Image (cartoon, rainbow, N blue to C red):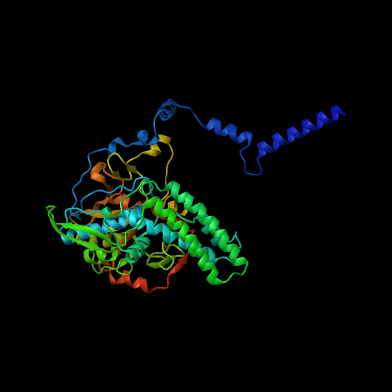
Length: 467
């Protein structure tokens, strides 16, 4: 009996080895692994790179010394601003960027020596509104099963600290703005991870309760009453972490030399009205995008991509990159900054605050090419908008063509006094979003707004929030 078992086992092992060698299911067979091992030649150059890489970071080794000349910091057209902000360990770049655009206008129009608007104030209401957005979304989809894609997306993303221009527009127009002295940063506004996770945990629990009430055929009014009670718990958590947003505050205006002029009591809305004026961030601006994966000269809307339930979905015009540049140049020439977002980490030399396609030579380091274009990178999830900054400068040549651009960042002081400089080639490859006043747009661009927008799902990977 043992002889038969051993024979059978031997046949099974032989068959397994034979199957592994043949690899009919597309796996890595023993023969394929042998060929892969043989393909690595272990040349002296390979050994030198391997030794270096085991002791140094890739970006240190791939840094292109041929591209390390001093950066030309001259710009033919630049919007002036004072004071670099710092979002620290939070995903609030969208809030910093939107408020930095506003403060630059306020300082220029009213001859202010300095001004920082409270990002914490805006963020408090952002988190409250997004909590309501989630809970109301759960109510609206309560008849659908938990494995429905929209329901699954809601519970996967109950709360985040990223955002878009449409979010800052909704929040500012609804809640106004306050100077940073009226609502200062806290340890948790500067490091949002823990409190956001805890609020998300509570929201998921509350979402399940609302679905249970809906399944029990509770009255709509009773469900809304329960939602409000749930939001009171969220409000308390937010106050404990970020502070109580002021409904009015006292602020002293100084002239450009720092001399006090007047002290007044404001509400957040009256402060916006006096120092920004009649600018309507929701209706006076358009969001444009350069997405070569989709047709240009088309209007798109992202479903449920907003910060405020009764606010506006993110709607944008997809334009060729040259058309985006025209809008940006016209705005900068008129001394107006813009909300701008991009794939910031690609080919970024942080030490120099410089973004250029030749900063890092990964191809020479590894001996392989990285050949995808912008469309292919988007299509394969290799690239997308990741960070919002304030576009403030462009350097034009004698033919009015851009050589380089500059943004005001929100990472605190650093190279170029906290600004990032990007070549025009980098701009073309990794720029994605721009919010610009309608007055700088051509009739052809504005005509696209008359189209019925193509509705895209909230989970489209191209439309993750800026952080």
